[in-house]
Amino acid sequence: MATWAIGDVQGCHDELVRLLEKIRFDPSGDTLWFCGDLINRGGQSLAVLRLIKSLGERTIAVLGNHDLSLLAIAERNEAEQAKVNPELREVLFAPDRDELLDWLRARPLLHVDRALDFMLVHAGLAPRWTVDRAENAAREVELALRGDGARRLLLSMFGNKPDLWHSRLQGQERLRATINVLTRMRYCDVRGRIAYREKGPPGTQRPGLYPWFEVPGHATRDIRIVCGHWSTLGRFAGLGVYAIDGGCVWGGELIALRLDGEEPQFVAIKSTRPRPPGKFIE
Image (tube, rainbow, N blue to C red; front, side):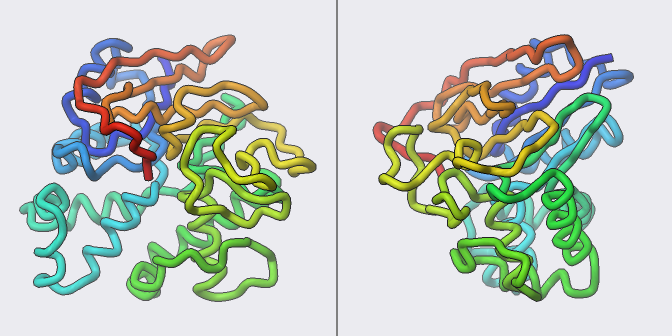
């Protein structure tokens, strides 16, 4: 019985199947953690959603920014949904669309397993967040996504403000700030203000900005963190953080990380997709 975390799939169904074969995934006993962004850009989003949903309790998937974007688009009228890219249209107009979207909406933004000593999140944590604070913030958004106010939240979710989470925020601004931290953060300043435009590898950012896990004086967290979202960071292990977005959709690799051994173990398969020159990944 193994537990594996898998990086951003982004609609790369064929690569996901190859990776599951390589790690010898056993659906009768193994568990898969997905760090979000299951869909978009790889061309096979519908197949990815169907596959991961079919695994039932053998999977834990947190929401990424692309997943939330799909849920928001699904709240628009049919004419507007028909204008999105063909890959997302295939999901939005599939016969099992409602089942897939309901399943996706019920995914958490954060998962903590104290027995394994790992937390799973798509992007990152605000510098001042403890584990408890992060869990509480995530639960607020999850309750809103599953409640009567879900449509309002999804339609007001987009926007770079607030770019700094603080406890005085209320209502939709508070929820949007939490979503931006958990699903969009890469770099921030020492206070935690997100620098959305900075997408390159560490060392390319403007002065005064830090990778979210390197901010001086950040809160102490007594757990290891698995995240994705940052393909230009790629495979990374340090400071209690394991980053596993290998940029598969951009010709990189799809990464799995075994969580239940004495030491985490990386396994990956190479993508055969072309890598756009100079592309910074969103």
